[in-house]
Length: 242
Ligand code: SAM
Image 1: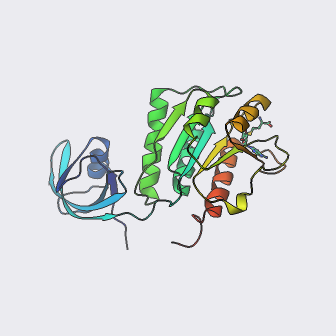
Image 2: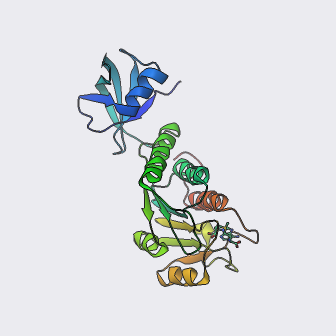
Image 3: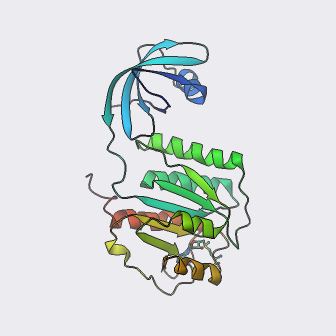
């Protein structure tokens, strides 16, 4: 059964207006018109089935037919914080894979050995990637991507998570058993330059456990996907549909 085309919009009532980029995509790329049904998402976790009832030059109006609670979000909250990389495509890859794997919070951060700089446009682009990836993998919510200009700020932003994992390339072994995680989990992965010993000490002082991903040095984007996958599997989020 073909899935309905999906759009994130604000202010969904009995009717809804689709405008801007989502309108352009619906009308000019997907060639949608009056009578076509679509799925609308307002980032609340609810899903709305709606039918296009009017198309204007810059917007279309839809009538909402039904609403139901989505079921695609992870039951356990997982956050992924990653050192902002020089290569924009790799940052987008990390965001895209984090969304597909079900994380509900994404934080890009700068650190001692990171040499890439964030801008409002770049951050906006990463949030667009999050939205598009959530639509593609049938999620009901797209996680916001935020930026922390220091590692400490990123770590503090994750203070509420029960499990705090700091992927450390120079850790001899992991200080936590990844096979039996329970509860909300924060993951921190360094940039190309990795972490300094002082940064690892700061993380430990803030309650983070050092995690080893084995004896090989993984690229930052590989480490993000690998550790997030292990965490999601351990939490029961990568396996039988529940
Ligand atoms: N510049 C570092 C070096 O040469 O040792 C490598 C940094 S690595 C490209 C980027 C990040 O991935 C690291 O900061 C760490 O968070 C994670 N990472 C990569 N390999 C890892 C491993 N074997 N164990 C734990 N974390 C790892």
